[in-house]
Length: 117
Length: 113
Image (tube, rainbow over all chains, first blue to last red; front, top):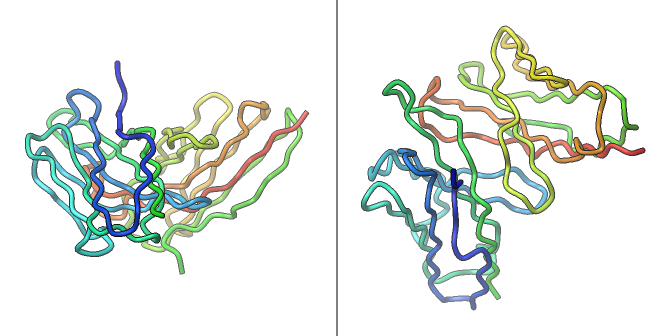
């Protein structure tokens, strides 16, 4: 079946603009995660949802970053007033329920490469 | 100290060689452990979960040593297609439940002819 999809794949924006990054998880996956990955580093956690409820946003760097998942499926990560230091690969992942229990085996999407000029 | 530490490499090995990567983690209460593989410019993909008893999947063997807080990955009979970055991953919070994962920086493997 289809994997995690993200759009846009590439986004170039000017400093100060707002951007919205979209993630469509694997069909039926109830948990959705956002990570940020710098070159030469592993992904760094930002936030995650179970269904529509945001469970942990401890990784969001500051209040310019927010995420939502209003219907428990597609999620949007929004960065307001972008800065050059926000440039990175933003990755989304999802995981499923198994036997009624949330699992932590996460499947990643291709990412959105954000460049802030 | 980083929560999950790996030698970044690169490890350059000839085809057919056996290579091992280690990873250390900082929290003894850590719950779940994984190895992910990441090819250049691609997303991380789950290679295998790591269990206390150790587990094997073909040419790949993963071991967990809770007392010493390290995880290892052994690749036997290396193939050119094994060239990638191997990410050590820990769930520090909840056993087998939806939770954030903490990644190491990755160890780069280059297999040559």
